Image (cartoon, rainbow, N blue to C red; front, top):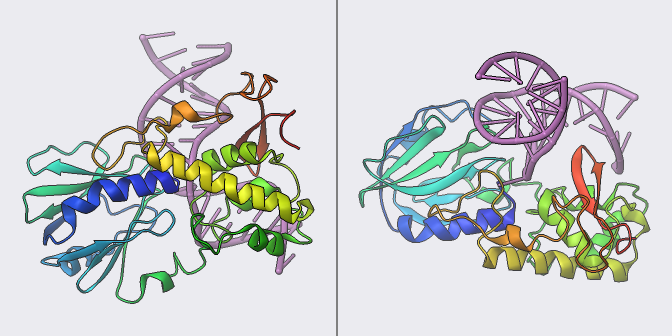
Length: 271
DNA sequence: AGAGGTACCTGGCAGC
DNA sequence: TGCTGCCAGGTACCTC
């Protein structure tokens, strides 16, 4: 689930297999996802040609001729390409049968993901409308964060994880980026200087770019689009490393809760 | 308006 | 061994 690197890895994994193909059939074994899978989704998609795979935040909208299928991976959702005869497991909720003889299989044990349909401009769909810029976009800058946060007391880590501010930074990469920028995760967003926000934006871009290059982070149940694991976990510097030595100063990494989520930081390097 | 808590669902794991 | 409780990549919705 995916944070941006996991979604982008998934997109890159499936895109070459499905763009330009025709959807023969959709098999929905479980309709109860984050929101119910629309009853008429299968008939809308039948015989549609897939013209592209876009990406917005945690969503993988697949553009077809007649509209856009919005796939949200939630926390535990995976998309992968399987052979036509592959037996479904208990959490393989949806199969999309492609005319080339393969299937796009959606697996989601926790069922926080979603499959939705929109006929209009996907960016104006209710799920996507309020999303902030993507972290690798030019619009996401130190000035942007600085301006948005004057007078706000919210912890900067919670700010980073709010999709309305920036889309695609979840718990893992928020922790890593704040370490990279030397900013304490609990610091009030309104009490961070423009200069430090510029450093933070560079750190966010750096950690996401490196994670995409390594195919994301494998945590428990993430597997890339083609079933390969991500290797970024080996590069994590603070996430999940409570009590272990900070890679910069060897001070033990601390763990706290910020907005109900586990937060990891170096008490010496991050202020 | 901003900030924090709750709910959704299942699996894995630590602790008893 | 088996049960219980807690935690996990997200985010909409509710309340204060």
